[in-house]
Image (cartoon, rainbow, N blue to C red):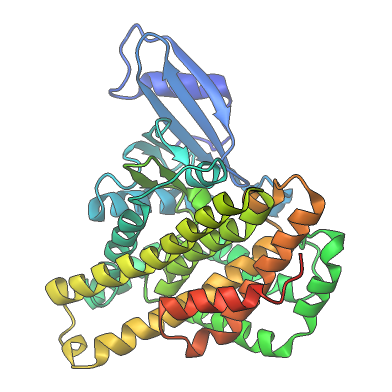
Amino acid sequence: MTQYHPLTPHEAIELAKTLPGPFTADTNLECREIGDGNLNLVFHITDQNSDKSIIIKQALPYAKVVGESWPLSLVRARIEREILQEEYRLCPGMVPEVYHYDDDLALTVMEDLSDHVIMRKGLIDGASYPLFAEHIGEFMARTLFFTSDLGMNQQQKKEQQGRFVNPDQCKITEDLIFDEPYRIAQNNNYDPAIEDEAEALRTDEELHLEIALLREKFLTHGQALLHGDLHTGSIFVTPESTKVIDPEFAFYGPMGFDVGAVLANLLLHYVSLSGRIQEPSAREQREAEILNMVREVWTEFDTRFRALWASDLVDPMAKTPGYQQLYVQQLFRDAVGFTGAKMVRRIVGLAHVADIDTIADASEREYAQRKALAVGKALIKNNRRINTIGEVLDLVSSALTVVKA
């Protein structure tokens, strides 16, 4: 058994040399450490004699964003690796291929996606991704349907649930999304200019009730195997390709949580555009494009999910007339609520989004923050009675009319 220790770049190179494939005996390897966020070491290994490259990702036993005072289990590396393999089986080509792993060192060697860009950065830079909604709709439909009681043997699902119990990562989500934004908490992080908004979040009992219901669903509703952190910073894209990465928050939970994560991050980008594009017609065009993407993401998911229900359903009772409609309607309402909760936490919680935080003008940045909170709160408060994606977009529009620039 190998003793766990964080790798150095030199050790990452030496490890890469021992792997079968992709490098030759005369390889000349270079290692660059790249950040993936708050929880891991990531090494980009390239052969200077060819165009071949790999990624080595190693989990740290603590959260980098805080330090060793926030310990984390290394089991998440095994979970992430197995999730990537499962997602690759269900959606070939839509996640990086796993080449090698070492559970003792909590590391995974995988396909390098340097020919793609992180979607969040691409959106900020003004790029368009016309196939994204189709791709992510397919990814979510297949990964959620085929890991649920609808698409897999129920006893096998229960066995799989046991493999993907992920308490440390779930605790982070439970605290950062469903608790701390609604009270005074050490991890909260927001601009002093929106202290009035933070105070309003702490005193709004109608909002608290809906968050409590969403939290209960997150804690108890093991519907399907979620990615668990499916935002635009966990998706690599080109105009023709979509690759989902970083499923280390994966666990069995409510399907709407993954769907809501995607919608929330598109809407966070949408509310940032007033601080990014000054020319009115260009801004309106981009806003319309992003809102249409929101609509299409749900529509593509809904269409593909129902198609799988028609072709691959394994639960005979789920064929009962009317059951599918009630099931998908509840999934949609869950997604709406989780969308709002994800938006709120990204403004007042520990981890923000670059879409808003990198707006240079302070007043424009504050305006975007207030818009995000207005939309988020409206979605949370209305999630249990909303029925269509068109109603969601109407709610977004009406919420923004009360926010002053």
